Image 1 (cartoon, rainbow, N blue to C red):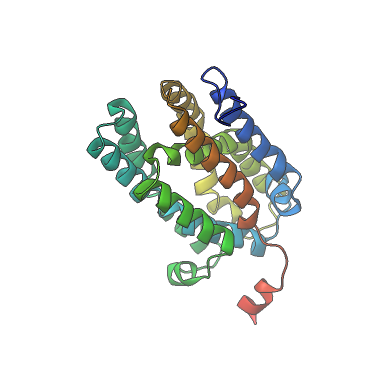
Image 2: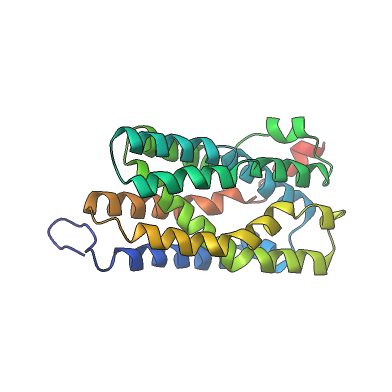
Length: 236
């Protein structure tokens, strides 16, 4: 780290990004609701809450990646990275439908899921990534993508296995499409993304990606229910 500018040195910034990803996993492992998901002991209401909040942010992934790619092209920046953003937008297209299908199998019709209230953490996540894509450093969204895909590699497959083994949520075998899909795909995505990101040498861009990764880590625990009585309001 440069002591005068506060920006990461060129030789260590990817290590810092990976550290943010590891810290996200460690933070969630220590969070009671997230740990219950990973261990398969989460109840149906909290699992549905997590899927609903995930739906609300995932539906923005393809539009944001697409706009970031187009903006990078307009700015004449990083053709290879702009191409990767567009390809990732295509890869992520339709993942919100996986979530709606999972929720339907938990008894949540699409209208109920789409109309469910977004939590403050999801609002902040969407607002931040909108800002970086439309007005900030367009590559910054890849800092968010990196830590989320790293999380999927580390915890999605185990979560599916534990949820199925516990079998305490009605119809759970038909409600893990989203988690299973990311467990299968994201290992390759993380490696590819890391390879391309190593070509970024501008301190401003490196710092923007790291900041997005940190913000995602700070917000992600807010995607889980905190047992505030919300579920009683839904079912009363």
